[in-house]
Image 1 (cartoon, chains in turn cyan, yellow, green, blue):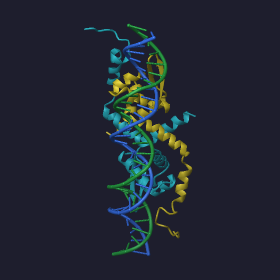
Image 2 (spheres, chains in turn blue, yellow, brown, cyan):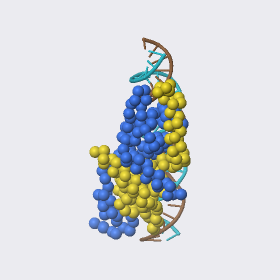
Image 3 (cartoon, protein in one colour):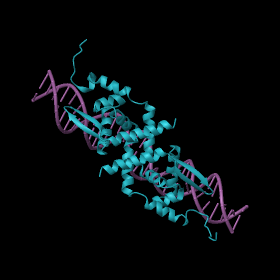
Image 4 (tube, protein in one colour):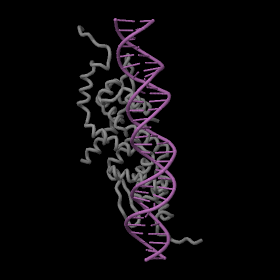
Length: 120
Length: 120
DNA sequence: TGAATATATGAATATATGTTCATGTGTTTA
DNA sequence: TAAACACATGAACATATATTCATATATTCA
């Protein structure tokens, strides 16, 4: 058994470090869920919707007007946000009013704002 | 009420609401920057990297081992994270050690974790 | 009831994005 | 100095995603 001491990094020397970090990782499913959550914030149209709804509840066509986009595009994005549990829909007559579902949504948005404003 | 109320939403009735919300929106560039920031968290590979680096500084090949992925894939993603200002690189000999650049990165990550753990 | 309105959605298309493969750059070591 | 190593990167490919267009569903009102 030639157990030579290799001086390089990618063979065995750091295995204890690697194993320790692996032990500290959340389940893969959690990483996946986190990525899916942040993906919802990772599009400027959805970011605009979230920003608008952080001001007040709004119906679909008003959101479309605020963002100067087609109703259909907004509706598609609202469906994603709703499926992800970030916004909630309230039907009233012909209109559907959307609002942020959860304080966390605003918190994450605000935290992001804080981050980018520190870069200036 | 003597006002003749138009019953529809998408013509003119809500224009004051719309204009008020528009006035409360940040510049488009800010929305774009926010989306770009969150996009970095919106991929499970990058999420894994951020999670690993939140435990400790690590070299590229060790990150690759932790996530059980090819070095090249990790390197590509690290470049995106570095460009976005989320991680920092420290060169030491042949290796490059990466760490989170900023406390905000961990805060955003932790906030996301908190959100998804409340959904259970 | 039928027309007008508000929203949702499927299909198509264009674009963006992540991974792999091959290879380049820079550093250490034999 | 040449080989081994760690990392970076360009190109190619496959997949994911956002928007548009056409149309469906649902509600209100004449």
